[in-house]
Length: 421
Ligand SMILES: *Cc1c(COP(=O)(O)O)cnc(C)c1O
Image (cartoon, rainbow, N blue to C red; front, top):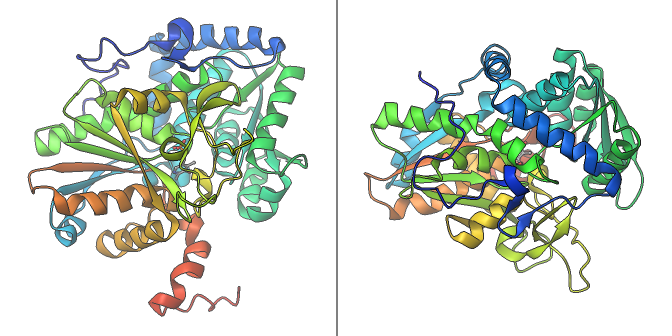
């Protein structure tokens, strides 16, 4: 398979912002960080700019993607799902088949190699549910880098298995007790560490978020998803997909599959956020659908804040979507109209996880199930000549306990068999 290495969107996107110049996507993005971090961000902008145009770095990354991460991941034509829905043809990009079971490895691998390239041997990361922590620990073990993961004390208790995975691979997990002891507090602590140890430390952010250059750097490393999928769709259907759908937490898997299609004006891009218990309640994390612009964790973007301007406590059944912010490029894409954002609630996502499991034998992550759910709502109203490409960002093994609690009784499957409840 021919994989194009072009990282600029195809023709037709000449008005698209190039944040390498000023770090902004229209009025979004930027570098809202303490003064002491500005030199480190400057160093990172330079190192990333050099690495992405260095054929040696690019070749090394591509080699590891092939031999370590298991790329390219396939595109699967979902025949039985398509028949069940009775409309558009549904294709699945299988990021669930990447090493560690999700797309997060693409970014961790790219940034790990960049850290090594910069001569930094100490890696810090923050994690919520533990999925980025596991991806960071994985890559650090493989490259022989020290790995310290900041994690809220509450999350450590809830995600004991991911904590065990990280430790097994040699990472140190540092509990964070401040605030609500969750992801945003872990992020604050990681930033504090970076300020103190900036000379020998590389800060590995897990989504297309944070101060410039992180949003475009994460996009660069995740774009391999869309670059592959574009070629794979052309090879198997002879045309580009009409619609591309991906779930949006921070926005890394979505921007990874969207970006190589941005210049293809006929390709509709749809991001699916988590509506949790409903967008009308205060238990959701549909940032683009229901939020408004503000500044969080170093970047200006859409945010969920309450009437007093305080960042909202969010909720989703899928831990990976449960964050009150979103990457700045998605804010730009929303305002410009190039991409559309919708939200799917917990119950509908669980139903879609079940639907994909029984029609295709693929158990998606609960995050990815949000994208499947929207595809399932859309497909029946479209013609049979319409092709919908859905990004299956990860596999659902990690969610089986949650799903068995939600669905076991309804399905008559004995979720208590293991005596867990
Ligand atoms: C973390 C995660 C997400 C959400 O993160 P994005 O940066 O929005 O992609 C989605 N799917 C899976 C499987 C994840 O682990």
